[in-house]
Image (cartoon, rainbow, N blue to C red):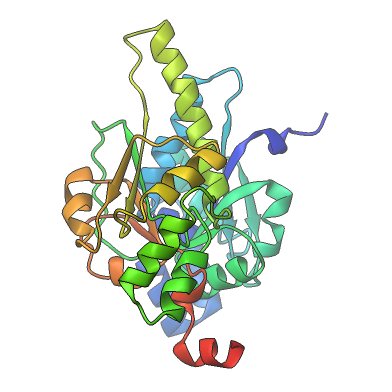
Length: 317
């Protein structure tokens, strides 16, 4: 009987997102592929350091301990390494006791086209070009940004942070805002008129739908066992504020998404919330909200008008 991958929440992650590959990559850039392969073979028994996505991956896999009969979470390694070079990654996985057994090794070639074969709801990569190609092909993907990894072993909760427009929902509201030269009064009037009209799903909408499903399962666990400690905690941190707030709630209801917290900031710097919330990963489509974060694992979603050059927008009009 085939393995029921279609019944799992699948995260595809590159080795450079899961592990610290800085030293390995420097050898590849300086000496080429042959030296890189020999280096990985020589270092095969030395575990790779933790990468930016490591705390997120480790904790989401812990959901399998809460639902041992179904083991609903699957993580798949998506790597441009050759299978031989990838052996070190699997030995590192074993060292950290991560429940990961499946992989796609493509020996230098793009591999995003195989995401639907693995039923992946998200592809995390440290390579922005790979992420852009995946997004352009219609897949949910994000670029993991460099930051210092802080992984508190005693912190078993998984806190997830999401921007709204261009991430959970599409960017049609952002497009309207841009088309009207950032006129906030016109934008607010537009969103107030459409408050009962949900936005279409954005690139990470399906992921949050599935996360929300597991949150409901965890709530059911708490009802049965008050001593059960919930793993998942979700928050939306958006630049929207009233009167543009109602459309967020309408959209979440239409997508059957429930979150723990929503912050309507109205242009307040998101770091003021993020530094208190301390999410294990935060998704946003605009680098202006991400490029100054410190010690917050951040993922850039290169989707929509926020990631197009002004010249491209003019040409498409």
